[in-house]
Image (cartoon, rainbow, N blue to C red):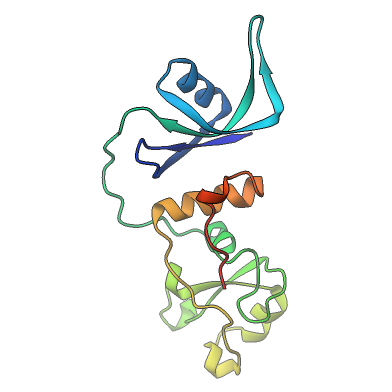
Length: 169
């Protein structure tokens, strides 16, 4: 299902909502459309409007401070652009830098996207023990960054240029 990014009045990402909810926010004048898809229209008996991709709330909403984005395998793959952290090819698995059997945990800083071949080659060892080096340094995205990365991976270039995150090196 199509998701629409909701920005706070201060332009910070808040959430992704369904297309239906985004249109309701706009029609109730609680939000304005910041970016729309001109090739797709929503039609009713009296009006036709472009499908909103990004909407911004008219009033600032105070949100509780979220310290961390929740870790997930999909989140790691999206963060790393589905590219292997060891060779740069297409990644389909997640590798623990310090293996779980050696006390490594499921965290943003201990996991990296990996292709099946490199994940199997590294096996139950650290990269140093396996004679492998990381091409990228794992990082922990902020909750807003995680939201934007997730939307970019689903919708491709659906976000406006001023919202896109820089490519992960």
